[in-house]
Length: 151
Image (cartoon, rainbow, N blue to C red; front, side):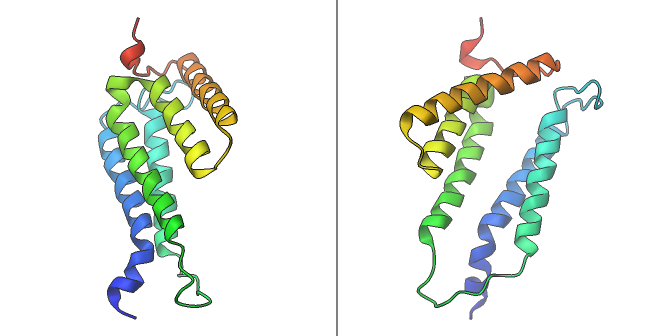
């Protein structure tokens, strides 16, 4: 098997690890705070560390043997790349669009596009999840970008 074919299944893990490290670099400029009094960088830094760590574990894990060469899962790879693109767009749009809208859109994409849940369930869950996250983090004192919903 050529080097490219051995590396190709690990590319999504490498991309997620790169995304996590790049986001960690950007988030490291935010004040971290403490566990009792988290600041604006607390959550992003922990998430970036987790993303890069889990992607590194996935990258280093041994490749699973396939039953046959024609047994690939191109749709699975497309879903992973879709999530990577969605996360990049989320980070890019967060400041301008705002936490509530970006988070609701991301959760909706994951539930509807990846999880294939019905529209009504996906929309309700996305709105509830975004509102719950917003309420939790603002209660903890973490400032979140209001974006287009600034009052």
